[in-house]
Length: 477
Image (cartoon, rainbow, N blue to C red; front, top):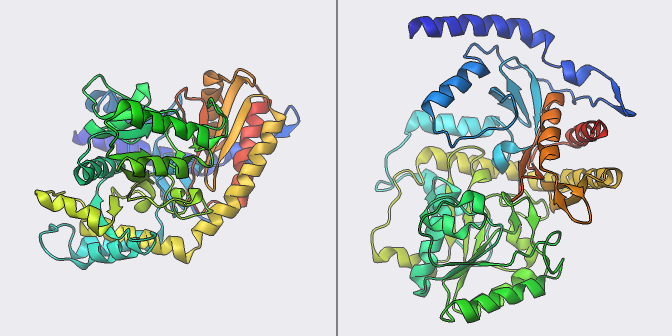
């Protein structure tokens, strides 16, 4: 092993020192022509990462294939070895810079390695990393209080978890305990997690294993682009009432949904849908669970939470991802009355609410407010969406542009009338944009939707570079 490590350090150092200067910005700095579209140039950025001396991408990939689960997939024909990050940029093993248009799957909210967040994590880790919530520590209470201040009405009781899946599992449990009912309604095309209960609430076959998943009914998705009723939210809402009338005893535990479906392909719910569904669910004795794992924490720009754009107030809010800027952290927030049900038995989470993670969460919240990242998400996101819509007018390949703030989706189709998913084209464009220095995600049931969810410190120059890279790539198809 010593010999192997020594070889890696030597080769990594040599490669890094040689390549970091001569390769890092080749694709960004050249100005070539392709069908009249100039190769985009990446905005300047005053940061150079330290030389990387670790194993190569090929060595890591071989190690991953031997020792990690084969279920772990990766992007690109040649997967990237990302070794450094700063604000809205990522750097590979050779020091090449990439614009991060994916944000670790809508997770990096205030920017990679934000100094305030790093400082909070380091300072807390030096003091005490973990004890248990059985002892007192101010970090968990400070963050809970700050978090409650960002929510409406009486939503002020917080239970911390480690992930969005855990948060949604707990929310479903609370709803069932509080109402005494088992049935939960979620939406087709939804993704709420991959554990026992949340896999039942998830409604995409490619995320569901053949195991028992009981007590969840999936309503017709109010998708303005692909849905059967277009943008008529109230017509979709009738299906929820039908599910209650014909698929349950007439009583339900709750209704769970995202205001913008993330994994499902950045699908905004048709306007008018949630208020109508809210009324039906309340009449059936159920609770409304807002899954804010992806669209919460100012990402939509117009609001801090996605549900606020629909004029409803949930009974339970779940969150993760952007809450910690990459730290494993999630939360369930509800009212004192509803929260009381967990006292009927013992409920405990060893790591949920640990000092390091909650100190990081509080720092993230402060950065979002101090740097006005919600306003930035609105301004830059609106500009980016406008530019993407202009690209849609230029290329038939783009069937739809949707989303809010810095949670945007671009759906590719080979036929606009039939809305035939352009799966191969999606992978091709992603790969070529990566070669130009732009990283974006993809999702949707058919895998044909670009998911653009960058850090909220994204700039208009970044937006221009991203769209220019997409334009250049599509011009060559």
